[in-house]
Image (cartoon, rainbow, N blue to C red; front, side, top):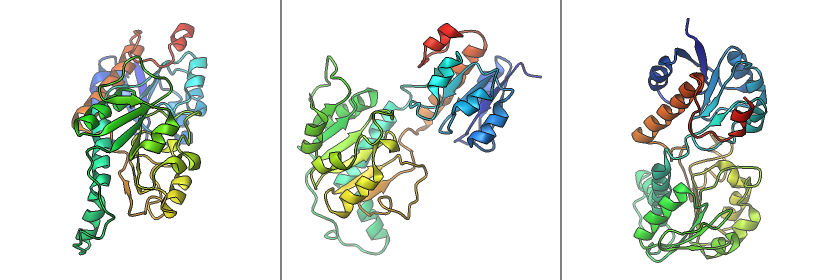
Length: 323
C-alpha cells in the first residue's frame, strides 16, 4: 500500500509515466481522474494527499473534499482554474511552472503573426478547396517596418519582442508597470496608444479579475481597421462578442486565437468560423521539450512537499507559514 495518493485531475497527454516515476520515489501513487468535473474530482480527492491539475477547475469544493491535501500543483503558468485563496486559508501551497514554455508561446505568437500578415491560413484553405487565386485575399503589406504591440512584457513578451525586432518590426509594449530596463528596440506606451498605433497586438498577461475582458468593444474601437489581434494567453482576456462585432463591421482585419472562452469553443459560431480568424487548440505551450519540463517540475514539486520539503515556485508563500 503506497504511503501517499496524488490526484491527477486531467491528463492531457498519452500517459503519466513521468509523474509516476518521480512520485514513486516518495512512495506515492498517481490516481488519474476519468472525468474532471468538480463533482467527480471532489469524490476522488477525499483520500488524496496532493492534487495535480492542468486545465481542470479546482474550486473550493474539490480542495475542501480533501482533508489530507498538502499541495495543489498546476501543470502550467496561469492559476485562474485554482481557488488559490481557499488553498491559502487551508495552509496548502499552490505551485506552478512559470518558465517552461516561454520560447514556445513566443514562437507560436510570431507564427500566428506571420500567418495573418501573409494570409497563410486563408490561402491554404482556398487552394485546398480548389480556388487557386492570389487576388482573392485583401492586399498584403510588407511586414518589415510595421508595428507590433505587446500587452504584457513578462518572460514570454520579452522573447517575442526580441524575435519581432529581428524581423524588422517596430515594437511597443505595455503592462501593469514599466520595467526598469526595456529590451533593445522596444518602446513603452500606454495601452490606448499601443492599440491605436499597432498593426498587430499580441496579448501576454495572466487572467485575473482585473484583466478579464481587457480587450473589449472600447479597446477594439481604438485599433486600426487594418490591424490584427493575437491571443496566446487566456481566452477570458478578450470579449469575443466584441471581436465578432468588430469583424462584422470591418473595424478589424482579423485575429488569431490559440485560447478561447470556453474551451473548446463552438467552431460553428462567430468569431471562430470567420475566415479572417485563425484558431489553434490551445497549442502554443506545446513542444516535446516543454511538455517534459512541465510534467517533471510539477511532479517534483509534489514529491518535495510530500517528503516534508519546500517546493519551488510556490505562488502563495503565506500558506507555508500557516501550515
